[in-house]
Length: 297
Image (cartoon, rainbow, N blue to C red; front, side, top):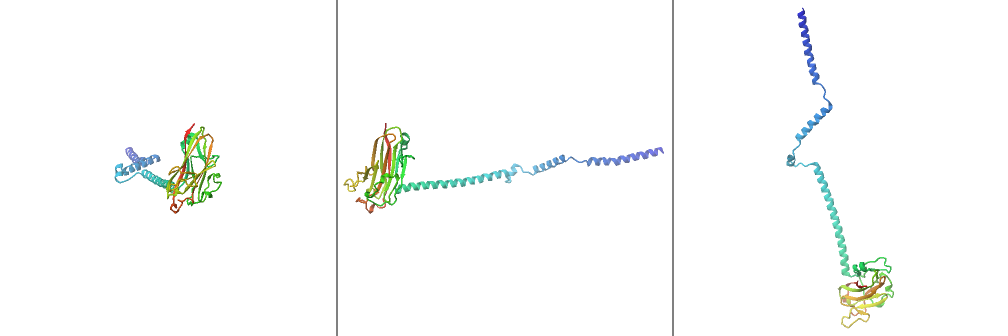
């Protein structure tokens, strides 16, 4: 009996061990993994999968694939380049328009005439010789431009206003040009200057009947061209033109510091001149005066 009990007992122990062994294996197998480790493994698997699927640089070049950032940067550069091109085009158009206007104005004055007064800029800086339209010299300059008359018809010099030299700046009539200006020595030295009135761009022989009156400090002198028949000076003139292109040559010595000279220039077509005929209709000319210093003390 004792042996039978021992056998039964051993059989039960063996059954218990066999039944507990699967439970232990099951427990070890079903043991939960930590979340962080699970995520890391998942990411690692995805990365490995992406790396495996991503093409190599050679393959990307072969199949024409380009980096997105490179495309975006290229698009921005193209847009910037397009904007710059438009801006340059607009600036070019504006510049061309300005040049065209300047050329047109220059051409207009050269063709239809003008009257300018100017001095050498070096004389203005070095010696203080300056021009102004007013005796106060509120605005000094080295160049003055007078208004012009476009459709001048002939008149008689006797019809000019008596006070024509008492108005400053441009004060033209319907058929004459009148301009008053001032020349001053704003420097510290006593100087000698010369003034030369010239004619250019003459057409239609209009200079044959032109008269130029110059008032210097109130003293009037009328200039005209020599008679076309060679008979000398016109009777209404005080002096003949200095040459074919020079109206007069004025020299002023001992022009002291602070001194001023007042000039009024009047230009018209003299109707009593025998050469004032229909042949000069449409004629044009340009005139001006240049002043420069020739000596200083």
